[in-house]
Amino acid sequence: MKMILIGSVYTDFGETNQMWLDLQTQALDAGAGYEYKLLSYVQQDTGDYKDFFADKTDIIHIAGCGTANNHAQMVRQHKSGKRAIVEYWRQHADEYDHFIFLDSDAFPVNKNWYKILSKHKAASIRRSENFDDTIFHPSFVMMNKKSMEQFEHLEQDDVFQLLRSNKMNIHPMLCGVYYDCIYHHGCGSRSAWFRTVKYWNFAMKQIDNKKLIDNLIANPGKFLRRMMWKKRDCVYN
Image 1: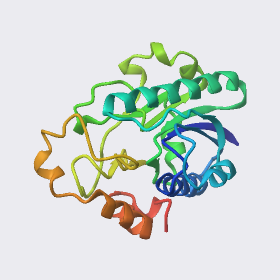
Image 2 (image 1 turned 135 degrees about the horizontal axis):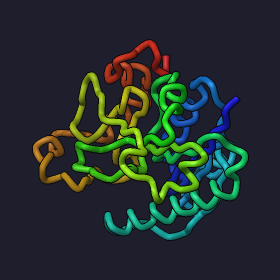
Image 3 (image 1 turned 90 degrees about the horizontal axis):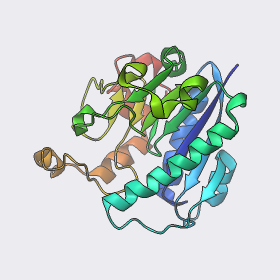
Image 4 (image 1 turned 180 degrees about the vertical axis):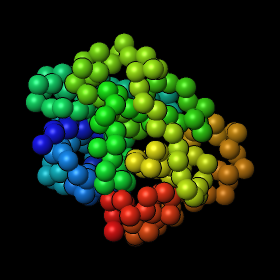
């Protein structure tokens, strides 16, 4: 059985992040062909669900860095979490076959996602809708052992790009399904802000992100299958 080491950065132990973690673990448990360990790097020691996180994940760090006051500070805090996860990966490299960054509001939607993506030495979501031209987007990055050990030196041709593939789009930036394998909500635990907010201004004014999240929680299968091409392979019934 293949072993995967997954790392996610969470803002706190609050109810919203507990909900995302619950969706993540349900989706990961429904996948085929692997076992996994989930690491959590938590930015603030606040919220009522610390025990839930301790049960579902290995908490590798609680930063105590306070609430980010702007987008730039939030990005810096997120990068600190990613660096800590990579350091943990490298300390345990011999124990796992693949290494994954997974945003707190991202998870697999296709039961066969691991079989589909593990054939590539590295794979990552590419947020073209956000004018993103980076090789890796932290919402989902997957690497084999060799790629993980040298990922700072990987080039565009080394990484399989997962583009947005929604059969049905609720919003141009939110609720994205990529390569019919991975769901990334976008702004799942923060206010709805993107670098392209001015470009998508007409759409941002008409969306109720809380309502979208509530609908997802109420019936994940119904919410996700309408965005997928291979509906029968959805991790949620």
